[in-house]
Length: 181
Length: 443
Ligand SMILES: Cc1cc2nc3c(=O)[nH]c(=O)nc-3n(C[C@H](O)[C@H](O)[C@H](O)COP(=O)(O)O)c2cc1C
Ligand code: SF4
Ligand code: FES
Image (cartoon, rainbow over all chains, first blue to last red; front, side, top):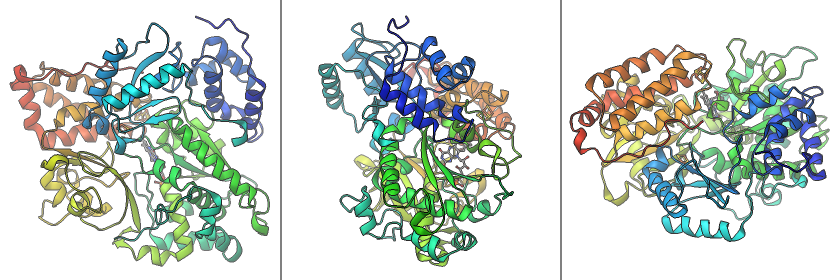
């Protein structure tokens, strides 16, 4: 699936890109690659298509392969389409000790999908991830930039209901504005 | 109550903001350093403090700083390691989100000591919201003349930036972090050269953990000697401990080094004991990479002495009967915990996070995960346990970066102290409860 809309950042995003690049010495604009990829993912439906990655390469004046190899290395970059809300449930030790497996199973049942799958309406994708630095408030999951901690089945239910009623795409950059830079 | 240096003002409402932070003595270390001290004098205080790196390895910070090369006309960099991805560790997130200005202040004072004029905080991508808190704190610092040109009229210039990662534990390893900061895959570099000689963009660079840099603030304010007066022996000062697992009060605690492990687990000031009044089975004391110890060995050393929360005491007995303070990620397991199943979560983690450059790590971590999965699933043999032991031994010490060792040690220690439990899974396979079959790997 490739996006039909023209691949071009919004003006606000372009302004952010310029600020990101300005943080590094002359000629080291490649350093801005990770932040720019996050921005691209937020701008273009939550994932990085080859066309989007080519666009990023052009913006940073680097080769497309330099973008592909980076995008495929880091787990936060999605190389395939994902639902509007990517639920990332931590499954590592501290969360496992406090019931992460049961939380995953509960979400699977509630949404009628398995880990790694997306609901037919394109609303949710369920993913398990490694420790997110929230071990003292386990079990936990992340959706967009937000940490949901001390999860119980009840809490999960109300979070999912809330997300569904909002119906919005959640990204890691939610609440990031050009003013912060 | 123990003395607090980093979290002393944690309870103050609004301490996240510049104004409140400043009202409570914030930025005093920058004033003191820039107006009354030469960079070498700041370094001298850090040396005197005995501060050791809080990122996991415990290397003396003053010594690390003194290794920094200073060739004429070449920029130097200070990079803060805020990648914090070691399972069980969440102290840096706590500190940065609660008191962001202490890190900004520490970055300014430390950059001055090192002669850096551009510094970066590299933070894991999943902490995007924390990065925003830092961005805000940094812009407040700029607005009040603590960053930028001619800071507080001292003639010293510094720019400070935040960079976000993309989700990769390996980028906590300092050379992988620098690669990532340069916009590349996080493949650790072969050392030497060390970052102190050739780091970011090939320039001399110091990489320090969030807590290490923040600790420079009280060290400069109170003097290195006062800092060194806290603690025991070579474990000076206070340490942030991330406590999780089966305890009544999980959370981040700032401890004076030297309190007993027993006190830390059972006293109401800290973890408050095991949940539901259960018995303690085992502890991973310093993040997923350090050896797991059974209850008796974590409470007292093999020689029968009370174990203390210090680098030396936790390491007493070597790997045969001891462990490490590491990053201070303290994971507690109660009597009903399956050590093998917990180990599986670690093995899966290291397999997932191996960067794939060296074959012992790339192949070995996957192999270990699969064998542990097989044992848990009721198809294991006694030979599998021996094989697991052999594999971890062949990874340890044979890789480019310490992730290989970090993957080997949890496996070795689990077999060393809990071999009977592995054998139980093999012998009583009919009684095994259904385990959850995650994808063997989902990169
Ligand atoms: C696989 C691996 C992951 C690491 N992760 C971190 C980390 O997340 N944060 C950190 O401060 N140090 C981490 N370290 C240690 C760093 O390489 C480095 O020693 C540390 O940042 C130095 O800072 P310090 O001297 O202040 O501790 C890691 C090391 C390895 C081998
Ligand atoms: S030990 Fe593992 S993580 Fe480290 S460089 Fe080798 S393959 Fe990469
Ligand atoms: S183990 Fe789940 S957040 Fe750390």
